[in-house]
Image (cartoon, rainbow, N blue to C red; front, side, top):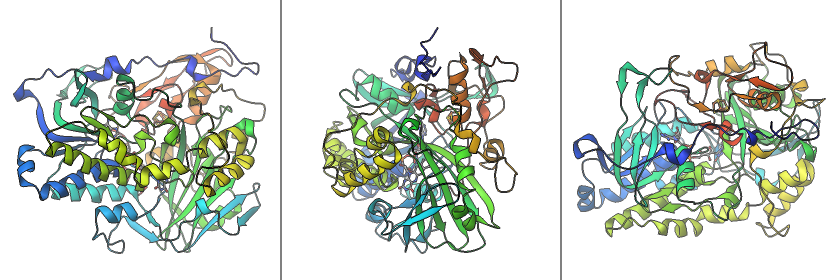
Amino acid sequence: MAATAKNGAIAPAQFPPPVDAVAEFVAAPEAGEDERIEVGVAIVGGGPGGLAAANRLLQLLAEDPELLEQLGEVPVAIVEKGKVCGAHNLSGSVMKPGPLKELFPDFDPKANPAVYTEVEDDAGVWLRNDKKSLTLKPTPPNFANKGNWVISISQLCRWMADQAEEAGAYVLTETAAQKLLVDGEQVVGIVTGDKGRGKEGEELGTFEPGMEVHAKATVLAEGNWGHLTGTAVKRFNLAEGKQPPTWEIGAKEVWKVKKPFGKVVHTFGWPASPRKKDAMAGGGWIYPMGEDQVSIGYVVPLHTPDATVSVHDLLQTFKSHPYVKDVLEGGERVAWGAKAIQAGGLLSQPKLTVPGAVIVGEGAGMVDMARLKGVHLAIAAGKIAGEQIYQQLKAGSNDFSGYERAIEDSLVGKTLREVQSNRGLLDSHGLTVGAALSGLDFVTKGKLPPGKPTLHLDKEVAVAVPDKPISDLYPQPDGKYYFDKLSSVFITGNATRDDAPNHIRIEKRVPRQVAEAWKWMCPAGVYEIEDDQPKEGYVDVTVNYTNCVQCGAITARGGRLTPPEGGDGPAYQVV
Ligand SMILES: Cc1cc2nc3c(=O)[nH]c(=O)nc-3n(C[C@H](O)[C@H](O)[C@H](O)COP(=O)(O)OP(=O)(O)OC[C@H]3O[C@@H](n4cnc5c(N)ncnc54)[C@H](O)[C@@H]3O)c2cc1C
Ligand code: SF4
């Protein structure tokens, strides 16, 4: 029987998922020459980081026909599990445009469908309670966004993938990278996942086995929950001496609205609890997407002790505030999505290279959590990875350790150093004091307050349903303004086969507290506790895995998401 805290709270970490990443997801090469795919550089993940790496490499190879030829028929391959690049990508998204413009000097925001608004005004708003709000003057520096662009990340990824394909990349969509191919102490590629297996893993008529993809260099650009990144970190002990990773989760809606909304707004305060012990330091956003659409969203940490914290429902609650209602009034929801965010930054950043491979983007904590911005850092890191890999392949080497130093000296390293205490300060001091201290940290570029905060694994925080749970605030769904989880998943175009095997690993019999935390946490309603289960003690968790939008939160909170069959999951269009 697991140890229980005084108030009955139990940590999900006491019920580890049945998975051994290194044993299951690392393979030695064994396919013969005619049974494998040979590529020059294999890029896992067609998000902004992976696509920036592909595009930069191809720009350099276009000037170097000799190396291009040496890399063979497929110099650069991008392996993406979504139906298309962009289908699994979700972001706010206000982007700092610098790195994208550096990568594509001719990029024209006015002519590109991924860019909706060039930001002219911004605000930081404190939602003091369910009715009152206060706009801070001047806008706090971390909420300053003038000159940035509001984009759709799912559209930007589609566009960047087209550029890469035109430049000669082989874009392998609907394909999950399932295993890391390791020869001795060297990464030599990946193995793609099987397709066409049934519920019990049996081969269906449509079965296609996964393939070994052999590469001279492998780029892991998997984003927040990094299936192979996490595996590489364990296999090569890349996180030694680092603090544990920590995550947050965000849910987003795009609304067609009646009147234009002219500024980028970040909110803090209500409906999140300001009390330190609730560890709920989160906030909301409202971003204009052109004249007639807005993006709204809400973000909370994944280590809240109240088991009923649900980002899906906090977003619905956020919409009930008069400040937000005024923007959405008379409008219509057109898109929804949810995703976890790596929030540990530099404090939990693993080593970025192993022989044969580099880690790019959010999978390596490259997110500025003080500003909620990771797209530009992923693009900057991808560009650097492309350059470093090019230089080393040109020199006949696969030692990419120069990438680590180049990142440190770049915008990515500088930004992450300056905001490294942000998350930890909010966690250790609660929303109000934490926000003040992280503001001080921000303006002094990480110099004050002295010392570094301590991060904890999200799954080690004990959870329980308190006497006054936050769920008391959640509004009833009406299908017009407030929505339930299933109708939200429905509009993602989720395409997981009903007879696919379960890709979510959790311990299925756990104390009710842990089951409740998973049930509320999941934005897609995957975890259920049936009515016939006991009110206390151990319960069976039903896993409706075909609803999963692959947000990654369960990996932070005591389970393990593995990539389902390529092509499954959401088909995000504008989030
Ligand atoms: C709610 C929310 C709001 C945000 N708001 C902003 C914002 O306003 N501005 C901003 O700059 N940043 C924002 N961010 C952060 C930003 O979106 C990310 O940091 C950025 O997208 C990271 O890029 P990436 O390329 O590293 O990873 P991702 O964008 O996550 O892309 C990774 C890709 O890899 C694919 N993949 C993963 N594993 C595999 C595998 N094993 N096999 C095949 N394919 C795989 C995924 O399907 C995905 O397409 C936000 C994030 C969230 C979640
Ligand atoms: S089941 Fe899927 S959508 Fe739900 S929390 Fe886990 S990863 Fe996210």
